[in-house]
Length: 89
Image (cartoon, rainbow, N blue to C red; front, side, top):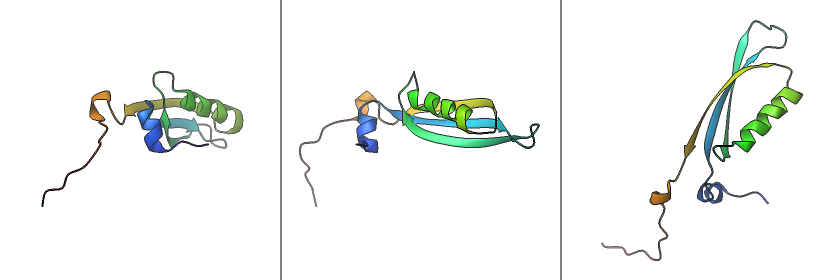
């Protein structure tokens, strides 16, 4: 069962964005880029490394380098459980 984005965020996942630089298979001296985003857990980044393994196994363009950043969407102090809501007209 796949979890919703909200469930992942509340479990500590953050948005990982990676930019892959790779050599074109037919033109080895030409670099191209590919952007990848996924919710992942820092500092180990298991989904990112799983994707890198997939790339090296299945994609013909050899990797040159990978740059990535990670941002938690909700910090511990930013989440509060609301029990009710009052409207003032």
